[in-house]
Length: 358
Image 1: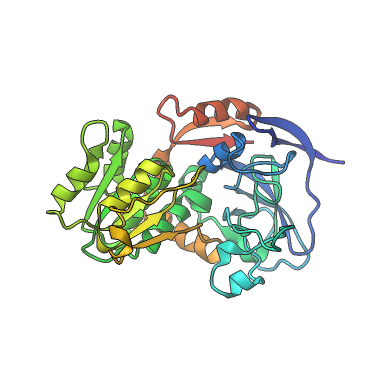
Image 2: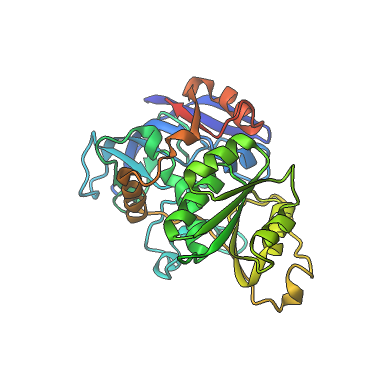
């Protein structure tokens, strides 16, 4: 049996490199030889035991690679072709998909018969991408060819981070001329900043505590950068907007503090688009919600998947309108992935995203 190296969740606090069999594909699948993948903040939640997955599961959900094998039913692709697949790889046959919410494709759940976020399969319900090979299910619906001339690093954000950040801007329903506040400028927040710019926001205010990230946010389209260590960001944003509040706020960290700040700076009738992965219960303060009478909209989202979503994101990268190559700050071989996790989980050395190269 042919074997491969894979980063496997063992127990909370422990992900290690192990030997696993190379997956056998079915008629609707593809086997992808990974050329570049990365570590996501959600993987850190898995590492810490804050998001439960099965022991022995290969982690990771952001693949760039080359088609090694194609199932007999998969048409329109060829072996040796360079492709990506979204972190969300829906079947497009479920009730959720046909109801227009492909990210919530669904899956088995012993208690309720449905698992939210079921469209997120890599590194969640099936083996993921931090390996030499990955099986892509429903391949014809999920593989997207990489345009010639683009590097792995340029397209590495498309499967998840770019799709999620852009999704936050889309769900915020940003219109031309809007004022937008974005809380946290990690990789997802930076992509949300770029997405808000592309959507037509006339003033983008971003908040973070790391000056290097604030500097990158200006490259992504930020007009005003606020370091929460230096100013009261709620007070400052309300001052910038003349007390009116922002049209939309995007929360991209997943903490009570940033969620509450995003809510407090909203105008009446504004939208809070929540992208953070929360590890504990949220509390909504009465005053910030105006006792429920402020016509606010709070919306969450999981990044859309499928080849059409990936095609659109690849087109944005190929057009040169955004360049996310700067977000890849470190590179590691797959053999050193535990070292990469240690760096990323502890946010050392100015890390934003790590390219993992099998």
